[in-house]
Amino acid sequence: MDSTSRSSASSLPQKNSIDALLHSHIDLALKRLKLITRRLLAASTALEEEFRVLNRLYYKGKNQHRLSLFWRHVEEMRRFCLRINSLDLAGSVNRLRHMFYNSKSYNNPNVLKASWTHVPRVQDLKMTIRNFDPTHQLLLKANGRLTNAYLSFKQAMQTGAFLQLILTLSAISCRLHALFQVILEVQEELSAAVTELCSSLEHPSPVSALPDQPNFDTPHNPVPSIVESSLQQGRHSPGATKRLVNKSEQQPEHDYELKQQSVGLEPTADELSLKPAKHTNIAIKKGPKKKKGPVDEIDAIFGF
Image (cartoon, rainbow, N blue to C red; front, side, top):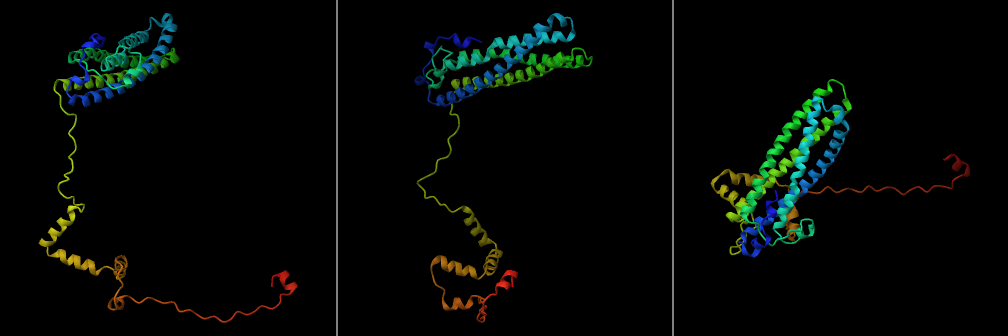
């Protein structure tokens, strides 16, 4: 897994010496490697916590349960955790990213914040892909063994002996299976990203075609073409004119007044005669109010 650090950084080609079409490919690959590193670090942290609990249970119960059938699966789970932790996938991806910056200070994250300056050689990237293949096989094998371990713990729980311990071990096996599956998916994504970068370096091509630019030589017509198509259809269909006439006849008469107001023209005498008559409210005259006489004090008390 350390093949990425074996090549001398001074012999790596610089950014200015490669085709400009490759810059976008390398930018995309570095973004993907950054996301992969974050996912691997999160999975590695969770895996270390589960391994710490499993290791604690192993040292507390190995003298008592070492002859039991389910304990063999506990030892196997522990060995897989040790092997996968020793792979240090996150460290391998970190060293691969530092090759783009001509740096060997892998513990300095500030180096990765600047713009990349160098490009790894294609043979180094292909060597990295080949080194990831044993990791893929190991993760597949570990997932299969963890499934068998869970089935063994489930069968051992039926006896009722050491129920609390076996239940904890079955939960750890499920958790490890989920973490190994996440690491397997990230490893496959990592291999795909490095493979695409190798093919881009060998056969440079643009990442994606640019969108069609508008033609500024010809005038732009903001009116949609639906109006033109409707007009063309009206020429060939005789019923279209009838529909237009019927639609105009169904419009209310007050729409004409609104159109006149929007244009700013006053209606003529003929147009006023066509308007519907408005209902006027006739005011009803009321007589004068009667003046109230002086209120008696006794009536005021009782509300009269």
